[in-house]
Length: 488
Picture 1 (cartoon, helix red, strand yellow):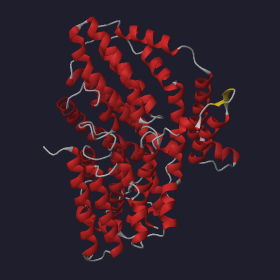
Picture 2 (cartoon, helix red, strand yellow):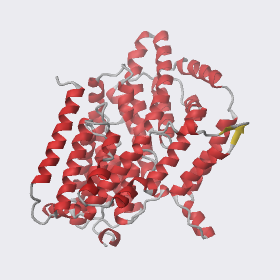
Picture 3 (tube, one colour):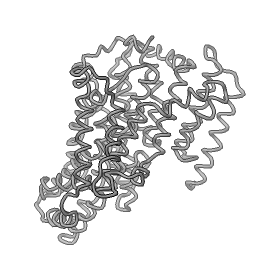
Picture 4 (cartoon, one colour):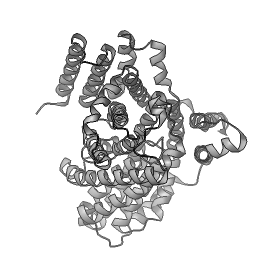
């Protein structure tokens, strides 16, 4: 068995070797040398992302080093990718989320949701899933999982003290439910997970096609609402047989948690008001712009919410958010998203995307729905071995070019595949929530694979069907028509 460090070292060496081969070899017919080098950079980054040869966030800076070196972009031009408006939107969302975590607002939200979930094991799992998914729409799925884990272990411990057999029947499905619902909740909003922002950034940067916060919500939220109870049903009734008998375990835990958390602090109230204001502005931005002849954008709203937290005082010499609190945000994700935008931009500018798209002619005439299912399945299972953000950074430009090549609206491929990247449930490395739950020591790989493979297959069909239906019938997008903005 190869240990993790050795595996990473192999990945480091193999990635460099492959890139050197691209440098010294001639590009294929109809592809420029710059496009060939871009393909080499993409393979280098993919190998390093998969093997974690260096931290995945560090891999995100490769484009800003290599593209200017090979005269693919000027340094000023490629640097713009790392300060893209949607990267800054993510920054604003992170700061608001960090303030919620710092004041404990996210925990209060979770406890209030759990208070009305019921006391039977299956209802407890439902309550945890609703709470985790609701928080994960606005807070990083990693943070929401970490926050819910100690609450879950408290419930499990009480169950174990009351009825010894209950611990084993509740532990695995409850912990898996938390991880899965954190990923599913992140699908609902544009800032819920980096993959959503990654796709929106690629579309905006390369095709001037803007997906607003509300546009994404109209697709992502219905999928969350549908997928969440389906996963709950399979976890509690099919994969695991979770008892439905009532218990006082949850009530005991919640009473203690409520005593510990006490009354809402001024910080919680202010952060909650700023959060509600920001979310409302995101939701009604278009209505406000049209009504008052303004030009507000999602990025400005997110940064405005973050700025308010630094301005509003909660007591003498203390603001709702301090720089120490904001400094705890995962800055590396911003580099990762920026690197993905830079890579996709190079795909487009160098002609690599069009070259790859030319091979899509071999699939012309195939049933589009079947092709979407195939690509959604491919993305889900690739994400099991790779960062979901890295997967979308690599494959979104290819999917868009493929769709254009067969004269299909790229959104019918790009959106379901991006959502699918959050539905990899089999392995700890697939998503951060999976890794957090596996790190508790209470979940085995066998349990994750046994559960995850079933839910992966369910997600393939559910994500494809719901996305296809919403795009075709709710948004009235034409399937066999590429919008001019993707061609010009």
